[in-house]
Image 1 (cartoon, rainbow over the protein chains, first blue to last red):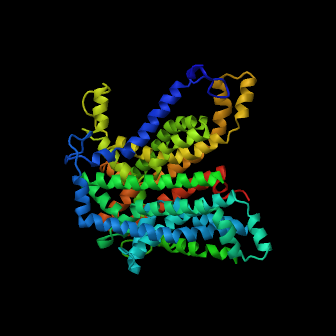
Image 2: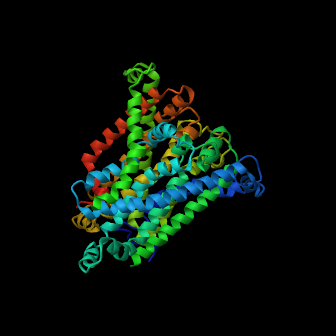
Image 3: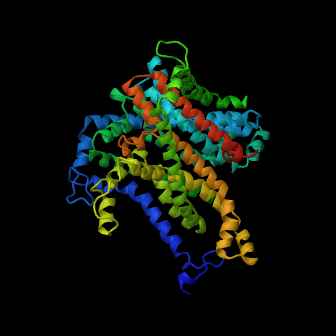
Length: 273
Length: 274
């Protein structure tokens, strides 16, 4: 039987009748993907102007990027802050999610809402607020200050992912271990942790990316030798269109694609179990 | 005690979010001479320019949300009709942009929408318009860029809600004689509404505080609250005025979330019902 004449859903609509939906969805999906990947071919252009498709190919914008002390330093800074944020936010968020979920305390829900406020408060306010307070404490333009600020943004994400993971996990297993004499700590590390490890890895990657991609807070509280990559990119974007940004963007798309595929892999592993 | 494990996170939120917010609130109540006054809020009512900034902010946020619904609903519907496996693959077209830096995507739109950009060339080639149209450094560019960045926030909860709709209900409706169009509007659509409202709300609230995309794609013509706050700090170094603008933005956000939270029980969605 012809594919287009087969019923597509519960109401006996055929695929042929649904053709418009498939076309509309395809166009939308293309519009979602094109702006994400268009920077890749553009970054290999030889021209100083952004043209598509490029008439001549070259690696000159990558050379420009890798030869520039300014870009290299800000890239290193962003990596450093991203990794530190990941290392702080993942355990803190996991601890908080576990405590709030397992305790069943009356206050747990209130504390949960309190801890996800950074997702609700407009980031511009966090940016100028920390800029003001950190300025008094001498934390502006320091790695520590940025890690602290980025941790507050990443922790809620970790908490939401871990809480979701704990909800699909049977806590009785941990109770059994404890009734057999394991301490809570031991029961957590031996029984619970291995079963939510893929969610923890996903949360860790997301914390890194949250910090690495963060723009607004970085614009305010990073600067000098500790200016982040996004801060440099933003000022370059506002002033003139420098094709070096296409090269940097390509590298950033590569990083996010890799991390996304890693999480999809974790998810597949988790679902298989 | 077990709850003590949450203490480090609580301390960080207090240090990075609550204390700075409290400080901004305090600064917004201080006049030029260092005295306690409401002058910063009075100015907001007196000067038309402030009203215009808030108007622009709401206009951009509402329009972006509408665009997201218009293109997000068909996409989520399409994905929800596929098998889990196929949906997972096509979902990557939503997740990849979601995971890609907002700055990169804003930059890409800046390039695509230029006078000599890909979109103008394509439109001229297929005869949509004859001379290059100004698509960027204005409201159009801002809306296109923001809708692209916000769409995943609508599609993901909406898709989740659509997946939870029991197919048996549609089967039953069809069995009882409803035409496909009726089945959609009378059974499927109402049941997808909670997901759509939750997604739209997230989009709307996130739009209110947007800074990067309007700053780059608006080319100075689309001044939203966040842009105005930055401008006041950069040009006048007026912390009182900037803080007052921010406080009003925060209060508006909280009121919307509070009303919606009562309507939708958002914390149940995230924390579970136990």
